[in-house]
Image 1 (cartoon, one colour):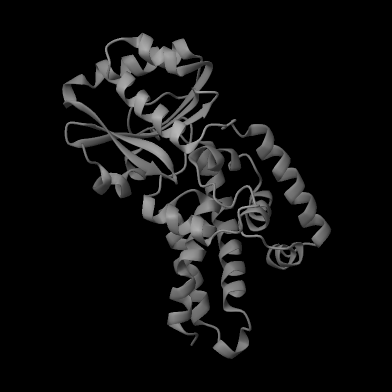
Image 2: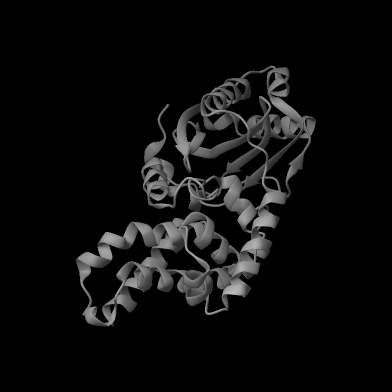
Length: 298
């Protein structure tokens, strides 16, 4: 039986891979558990590099899991957004990733993971291994059981698609945090002009309710429509209690938890460009907010 301590030492790394692949912590934990079961069935002397062996097993298990959930996500009610992760998880994942030269290394944002959903499972795996974990094409080829040339093409295609779909983000962390705070204040104001002043004209809002709570069934485009949508949601839920925003880092970025009364209503992150909000990601699906429950503080 392989060493338990060795596996536990690498567990955060395996969760990091699986979460980036699947966008769901519960699914990532299931993958890590299956990797553990496979690890138990091999003899320690058979494995020269435990981290490499466990990483490859985790990627393959994540690929299988991603293929299984693709059909479910295609029939998902409304936009599908990744499950937000807590600050401790985000810090651990960012520390585990590759050198800063890799664009994906420190980026765990909901925006990026949302864009990664457009890739095929193999493209996603190849890009994550190469750009987030600094694996060379030989390692990727061995993991995906493809040729190095095929893996190089997967990474090139994936990188081009991510670059095309990825929102602009050219504000400093301080400016980002300031915009998030101003968004919270404007959202609680009765004056819609305060929100309009923060939004780019072509702002888009993604709201993930998963069919369990009220949310838009499609992305909402344009400042006017986004403002009307949020005003409507606020009016419909006014009876649930006072609305309060609490700042919290979401996937390593400034974000907000919105509570109504004693219940979490949504978790928000914002994409910003040139001092304006260009995209809003609002996770409302209660299944994705369980881990955030203990972080809600007025």
